[in-house]
Image (cartoon, rainbow, N blue to C red; front, side, top):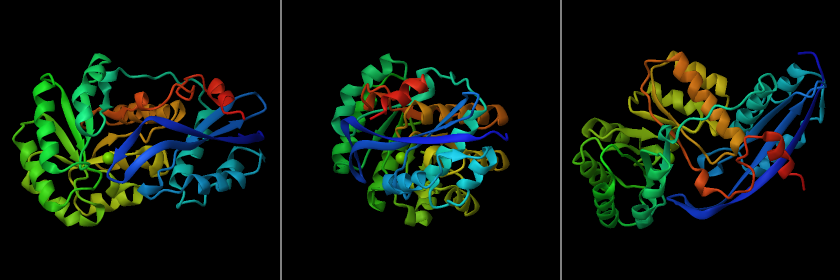
Length: 334
Ligand SMILES: [Mg+2]
């Protein structure tokens, strides 16, 4: 495309309805940036930067600084591409800009999957015991529960009660966010193995630097283990694949970098993945759904796992989940 483009961006800040407790600490606000390219024909391309600094991405301030140095007027599509080519340290920006430019040439975004294709995020702790019913009523059949936020004996007792309550056919994903020690991880995995296949997987039981211990756990227990914090960039994902990880890969696509490079890797190497949200607005969310659908078409025989995206009930009704992106954009005008 040889036409000039205009570029604008608007930051957002959304308070979670309820503080999100993880073993990284408490998370109270989701901050990010919406990007907008427009061409003289009135075509627009929206993208989203949704950084997650404690996963090793750029901060919101770094992402904003990057956006500020992009000119408002760009000569054409390819000068837009070269304007942000040099940024391996800004993976969330890389995702956001690639999506925005791609959206410029495709204007219909209406893919939505039924809730059974998304895992519903339960609150951590005992609150999960009463929270699953409304998610079940919404159609979710897979649930995700953060663990490692209370003593293991207490959490295992909650887990037993939760498993008694959950209907057969419900699946549970446990996410330790790398917060367990080896002994506690053995407790959890041993317990999960005795629950048969009702635990779909445990996400990141040990911190990333304990890769060899993670490999040993994966060999010893039947319950699958997923890597998440270990593989926050595409390079880390590749490294773990070539070091022999045969378990599951949790792909937080919005912070992993270039979605097209990710797609190529998934096509070239037979990995078992779960596409997962980092609490994006509708723009990032749609990109994740598009990516999932594209991968499913390219790789019909790959394992099918529901998306880690049942997260909207954690965010306020502030218009940023609106599938009308022009309306979403107008909301951010200050
Ligand atoms: Mg995780």
